[in-house]
Amino acid sequence: MASVSENIVREYFELQGFLVRQHRKYIARGRREEDDIDFFVLNPHPEPLTAERPFVLSSSDLRSVERAVVVVRGWHTEIFSPARLALAPEILRFVEPGVFRRAIKAFGSEAMPLKVLVVPALPQNQSARQETISFLRNKGVDAVLPFRTMLADLVEQVEPNRNYQKSDILQILRILKNYEFFREQQLELFRPGRRRRR
Image (cartoon, rainbow, N blue to C red; front, side, top):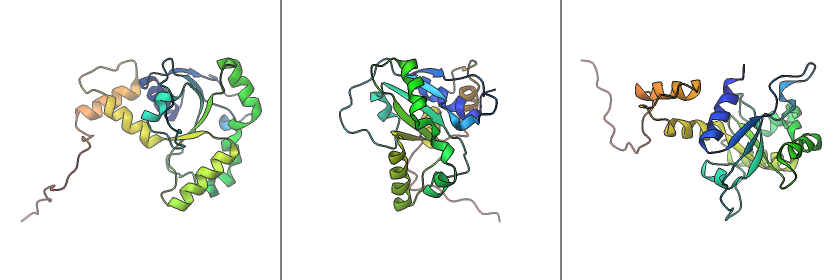
């Protein structure tokens, strides 16, 4: 059974209009799960890139992505800091040349796919964040996509009055939205305080 994190990533890319192909449906004996790429994604209608693509992607930045290999690191309680990356070099095995020979085989040789790493979070501290981004760039990662970005977009796009019976993730989000567990993003300057018991 695919991990919840991978299902979230698949739903997100499909909602953005990408065609998504899972690289493998199995884990080879003697190999770690994180040794390889998780998805090939293809945008059938990419928009032209008008400015330099940011390293930390948002949903709107994906419109110009034509093709990408995507690796999911869904450790939702950890932050991708330089120390974490130094302790676990296997996180970045997907940028090795052998992986891209397979990627080019899957996509054809027209254009090199973008190497996208899906991460739980980057450090909040600006210097640690920049150090992490530099480290990832130097290792060959082209962009990162935070889970927060994907989840916020999925929650925003799910409609409470639509039945998503073919997707467990979207159906759960729809139910939570229907029962008002998600609030609309708004500015709450004058939110009333809690009433005190007398």
